[in-house]
Length: 153
Image 1 (cartoon, one colour):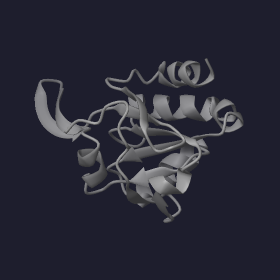
Image 2 (cartoon, helix red, strand yellow):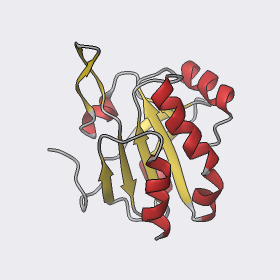
Image 3 (cartoon, one colour):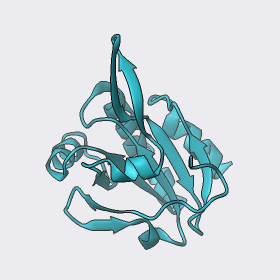
């Protein structure tokens, strides 16, 4: 069943870049931007992460948590986070179980080659753990501004 607006966001447990176990339920009472991206330190993923970084104070002031998720390892996340001074947790979904649960693990095509991977998607989750909005086929350069507009009106 696809994840759509108005349903409870699936619970998860994943290690972050500090090897801390993060659960969605830890953030009850706060809005969460849960963004799934294909791979650390690639052009689109770096642009998306850096836009969240650059807008971080606006999210923080609004009480919004940003969580990035990819199939990369904790070690890869550490390097990516340090290289670009990212202030928010990056969660390691190495076996793509959470990506599958959220419906963002699927067929992709790049330069004529077909493969399976993370479909760049973001879930805006409200204070009660409900999916408020799903952003599919995210454009990395504009996505953070699009989310802030939604959050701050």
